[in-house]
Image (cartoon, rainbow over all chains, first blue to last red; front, top):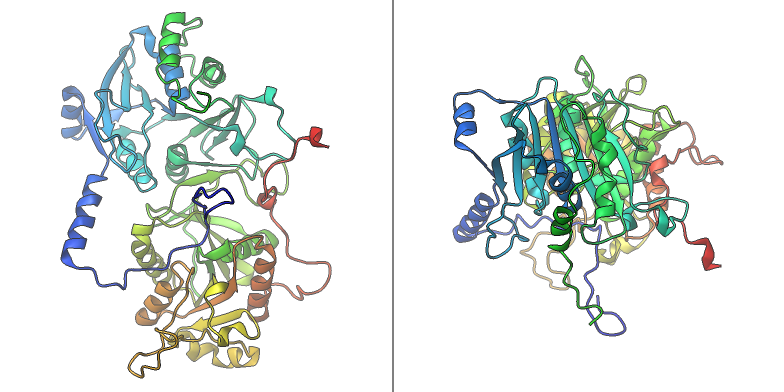
Length: 276
Length: 262
């Protein structure tokens, strides 16, 4: 759609594409499609010790699985939890899709950590984009590796406050805030209000929650609604109460080093040319 | 794949299944919402599949604080045993490359569950109608041969209009091209219908020509049309409207506005 000023906007439409599969596809098209499909597959890479154990048919014991999706949630864990030297990076997932950078960076964007003292406590940080068709697969593959007896799944995730629907006008001072959503098997009391209808959760947190609901796994998502686009320390702090429940297994660093904090906040300053 | 949410799997033998096709204006999905919410149906299971984009939220049909906190998933099955009615609600778009797989999954589930008939609520782009389709009612139906055998009389009595086959190349008078079934913007509607014809499944499609926008009136039109056939409610045209709008329809047009604006 072109506006009055001539710029072209892509308009989101709820209309559905007509099935085009009746069109005869030649072999080459089919092959390209198949190759793309293969390329889009999610791969998990484990450390030698872990893959050994998986190969011998032993799933990885897991009592707490903490998944952080998005820059604020992932950095919150980096600053407040993972600094304690008590964690081993034991694996990562590789996901390729249309938003993957052309040149793969050294740093992995989906990393699994295991606690040294209690190897049944897991943390996973995801900062890359997982495409819609990869979400289900990612969840199936990860949960397939874990021994899920008496596990508790906690998902930290974030969204823009502009996506939060409420009848009352939200004044700017109310953000960031936290909302929770949990499966039927979750027995505890969430640390914040439940997500009000008609708000929904999408993406990886939704895929994990769906999986847990269907398989009767206790799971809770804490969704932070923030009005800041980049990672910032105030938004990160809103996740604090979410982990206090896990006090026994996961220790929060009460006062993180300012240098550490600065490092994680500054590295992703949004490169904007809006105010040149 | 269907996963029961109860201890014992539900029995759908001889039930009628009503399901939406994710299509223009989400009319089918909105209509199904009205049915589930009005008949107070209970959830009996999920369709857990990689063909749908994951989404989740609290109870869309919450009536009180007590039942508001209940997780719901992209595709769920509801049941009203006294009416012998099962309803599948689909809340997320189908991943485009997996629409064929999704259709196959539905067809095999419908077959194995033993539904006596399946009704697909759908919609089609209003702007792509041809001249004959633009006259009269915007409602159309399609029915598979195996359902036509049983329901021919009922359909005759209703005097509904069947979806017209349109010319493949409008304007060209080439006698070699057969008129074809064309449901633009209908998502899996046409595929599901043709699959059901070949698999001998008793299935009907009720659809409505519409455009995107506020499609709530379209949903009422379609669900009332369905009710003329299935008689889920006694007399829904009676005022006040008997269909119950679910809580999840709140704020369809965004949040509240800043009071300082005025």
